[in-house]
Length: 218
Length: 218
Image 1 (cartoon, chains in turn purple, green):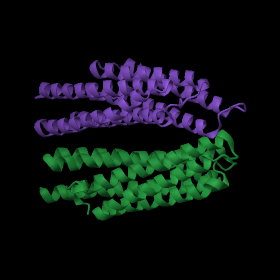
Image 2 (cartoon, helix red, strand yellow):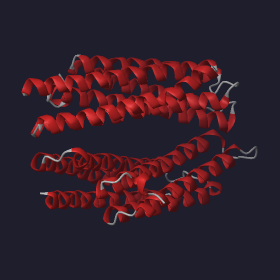
Image 3 (tube, chains in turn brown, blue):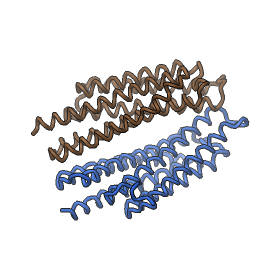
Image 4 (cartoon, chains in turn purple, red):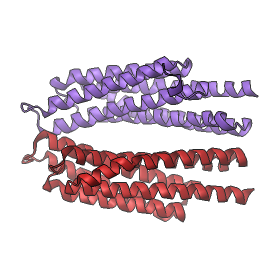
């Protein structure tokens, strides 16, 4: 029974890996759309967001099925429920990638991001992409060290967001309110994407090992 | 057993009502802080956000306890799980109220919102407050009609957000990038608060009646 339960959770985490790969791909493509004013890439991200929503439904159904069949108690039950939190965070990451794509599509054929801001967004996107990759790895091999790295990545994203604001709030900012508003909202989308990734890494350690992530940190 | 399960869910919904009242109070006070540059109000919202987080923990513990004791299956199990989604949405509404309060605190003693934008934010706050009140009512007396009203309220919030952008993007906008950025992010906080309220009303109808909200709409 115990082994069967563990096997069931492994199956759920495989669904979560598929979701994580999907939201990683979505943000990569949305960033391309944003930085190169690529309408086709933007539209593909917008169309494909329902795939992530469908996967979340599958996770919910699978978890309900495990709870009914295995009747887990105490920490096992909480581990099963944790999978629901992870899938909710992943779905939201997909939504945020879609928001980036929609901003790119709305401003097309103009670029939504002026040249001065492009390096900062490139940086945010690269760190966010590494975070999504680490989530996938943590879901396959629980590693509290890797989960700890995500906290540092999140700090890097916050630093980049501060740089972004510094550029837009400088006295010689030449682009006016509209570009500043888009820049601020886009910065927030990447920052929230990273926040959800941190949540997921903490939940994942618990899902897979049954130990709270914080107790495992060095 | 069946009656006991229903009584357990009613107890969970009472906890959710307490959360809903708390996040309603938080946004009211955060709006006061925002529109009157009231630092004390802002700090009180920031300090009290942990109360909502604690209530969410209580909901999670209570739901896990119900699942273990009652071993609900099929739609009953999904109803119990729905309470977790509602508490997650409520916690996020509390976070968003806190973001409004933090913006007010950061700009204090200056007002974060110039006179031109104050009527729009007052409007958004009023609709958001009505939405939080309706959630509380739906949690006590499931009413699909009331849940339907929340969709219309959400449209009203979206209209107000469009007005907000229109003012900030006008050629004669006199306040520059910083105030526009704050305005855009604040608009998003109220809009997201409303989105979570809509999610909750849909989940609540299911939690209390076991019927999907959409099937009950007129």
